[in-house]
Structures are given as structure tokens and as C-alpha cells.
Amino acid sequence: MQVMVENDLIIMYSSFGYGVLRNTIVKDKMMKWYKKSLCSINERQCHGGAGLCEIFCGDDPSEVFNIKQIGGYHHITNLDVYRKPIHQQFLKDFVGIHRFSREMDDQIGVTIPAMMEQSMRNDGKMRVVNENKAYNLDLMIAHHGHYDDRQNKKVAPRNPNALYNKFAESDPTLKDRCQSFL
Image 1: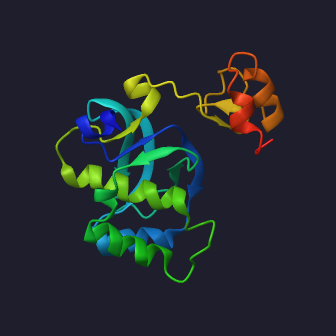
Image 2: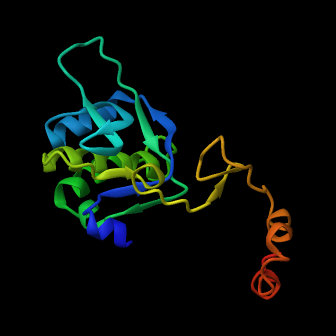
């Protein structure tokens, strides 16, 4: 949390590219509320840091609308940003009547406002960052068999008993804390 506050970040994420949005209805909704629309997002060096860079749609009708998403399994968000009226209006319109749709879900719901806010601040600073690449935070969060969504990292145990057995000897309090779960 200290990193978030000290650097005035919008979102700090572990994973990017978890799903792709291609529904051009969302493009129209971004235009309605933000007066511009993302066409894609790249993870690379931009705004002076390691994070996500917004690419806005131009006037080219052949332009591909293909927005990769921040992974939903772990991110830390600055809720003051998401509470801003412009983002709330967009999100209400974005979800519409599809409250439980996988297409209009939390992953793209945190991605679009974060990218738009970074762009609106227009201060050249990276505000949407990968926690490991930007700040060398190695949180070792297991998801889909990998730690911190890095394919080259040691494979994480996929079931609770395997995870428990891996750490049981090194932490004598683990049995008491995990017994009801296991």
C-alpha cells in the first residue's frame, strides 16, 4: 500500500493479458463518456516506467479494436479514482443490463478506467504499473499453477494439500491456521 500512496498510482497489477475485449459497443461507450476510445493497450516502457500504455483509436475504420485486460486475480486499486463521477458514469453504462456478463466483467472494468485516468492526468508519469517490473515486488501469489503469473517461475502447487505439505515443516503454526480449510 505504501508504494501505491507514495507514487500516486491508479492500479498496481500482477498480470496483464488475461482476456481480450473486442466488443465495439464498449468503444462507443468510451467515446460517449471520455470523448475518446482505447483501441489497444500494450505492456512496455512508457510514461517513464514499467506498466501499461494506452493506444487510442484514430479515424482509421480498419483499425483493430482489441483491448487486453488486467488479470482479476490480484491487483490493488486506488478506489478514489474509480469513485470519480466520470468513471462511475462510464461503468454504469458499460455494465448496463448485463450485471453478470463475463464480457463486461471486473477485469475490463478495472482496466478501462485506469487507462483513461492515466491519460487524463496527462503528466507523463506511469500510474498503471506491474508490481514486479516497476517495484521489484515478488509477492509469490499462486494462480493457474504459476507464481505472480510468470511462466518462467517455479510452478505453484495446484491444490491446498500440496501447498500445505510444501510449507508445513518450515512453519509449525501452519497446521493450526489451516486445519479447518484442509
